[in-house]
Amino acid sequence: MSLLSTSGLSKEFGGLRAVHDVSFALEEGEVRALIGPNGAGKTTFVGMLCGRIEPSAGTVRFDGTDISRLPAHRRIRAGMAYTFQITSVFARLSCHENVALAVRRRKGNVAKDVPEALRRVGLADRAEQLAGDLSYGHQRLLEIAMGLAQKPRLLILDEPTQGLADSEIEDFVALIRELKAEATILLIEHNMAVVMEVADAITVLNFGEVLAEGAPAEIRANREVQAAYLGTG
Amino acid sequence: MTETAKAVILHLGLIAVLFALQFVLPAYHHGNMARVMVLATYAMGYNLLFGYTGLLSLGHAMFFAAGMYGMALTVRHLGWTPPPALLAGLLSGAVLSALVGALALRTVGVAFMIVTLMFSQAAYLTILYFTTWTRGEEGFVLQQVQRVFWGIDPSDPTTRYFLALLVFATCLMLSLWLVRSGFGKVLIAIRENEDRAQMLGYDIFAHKLGAVVISGTMSATAGAVYALLFGYAGASFAGVQYSILPLLWVLLGGAGTLIGPFIGALFTFYLIDITSGYTSAYMAVVGAVLIALTLFARQGIGGEIRARVWRGLP
Image (tube, rainbow over all chains, first blue to last red; front, side):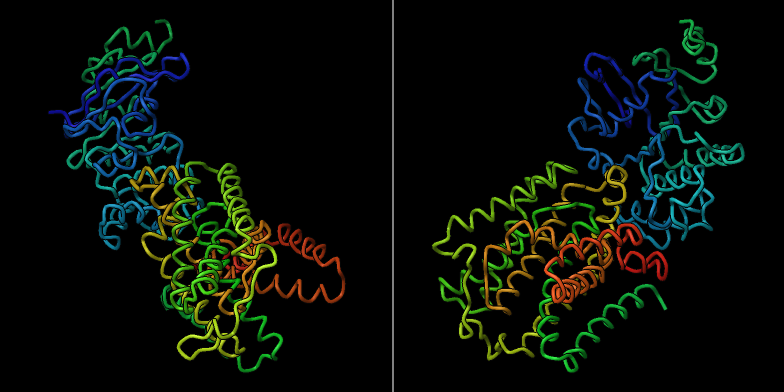
């Protein structure tokens, strides 16, 4: 049974079909990349998965139960974690408190789990800094730490490497490899090198529909995908 | 010294200073301080919602008045003694804030401000409508004999001062505990970034409703105690001015700091007290001070202390 699946998931914004009839399944333990040109509906799609956006039609199932009607916070409590495309941290709180908020919600051990999560993203020495004082790249890492600290079954990362330096991207790739053992990961990503390196499978969205799905090598060789990206499709 | 120890010492220190002041203050200021402490309790209630949760209400006078009338009406018409009457005041505030919160929290931002303002005006008009019982604008006095309980006479200045201090100190330490608790930290997280807090799995509505009820009940406590200590209840306390005042005090003293409401209430009280001795245009002076503060100390006095002296100020 899939950890997460959707059937016929659609979203229309006043006549504009942002996502149309997407049926999608994610197996436990896999790293799936969701790619597609700008405006393909990727963020809208994951927004419907985690409850930020109400679908026009279709259902979402998580761990065997229909969660289509659940509000976002209940889905998070069910074991999802979500990092925003546009960095969203508690800017006026310390890094420690940012992560502690994630740990306390699942009644975890703050003294142990917060330093652990910060260490994994390489921010261990910045625990007492205000999140708003961090560089953009570090804020993104902090948000990933907040995701990790929730110990989710499904981690949804919306363009996590955007704005990261090359060396930070390498660390990120290593981190995802390490996380594979603990969580299922759904990754929206523009950086193809990252996608090819970490993803077990890729789903390509184009104009709100699934254009292709398969192993990285297949997707790379797919002519339709190439056309969509080059804009000649 | 840990942050917790520092915080506890600072706030217990303030309580100790207020305790000691009772023995040295001349009679006039002595009476003022009792009033300031009760008003500061009201402001602390307001601050929990505005300063810590980030919700700007323009209708808190209804909660203050709920406490005041819950206490005063039961004494006047039902002949209750102060202890159950105070409890009635607190309960009135809790019930009213739960109802208003459940409805008003369906809105956000400016709409929330307007909805709370409207509810408060409705409460004000309700008090006027039932003038037969409430005596409307004119209000009514609670006689000394009606206010005595357990051999304690709140009309005695020293007793009154200590009762005001007791209530203020209790609410201050409760607030300190609350804002450092897990629940309080979620309120701060909601103030800072509601979206993120929700996507960490927190039920935003439930937390905001909890904040409205705690804030409203603390405001009602101040209202009930005001009626007990000063022996008066009147509709002017439910008016829009009494919704604006706690906002003013909290802004001046420092929103989102625990000592801010007290500093703001004290500062404003004496600013008006002193300037009104010189000119009838004292509100112009208050206005000028407010402008100066917004220009030079945006976060209020407590906020400046946090920014310059101690970042961990709770």
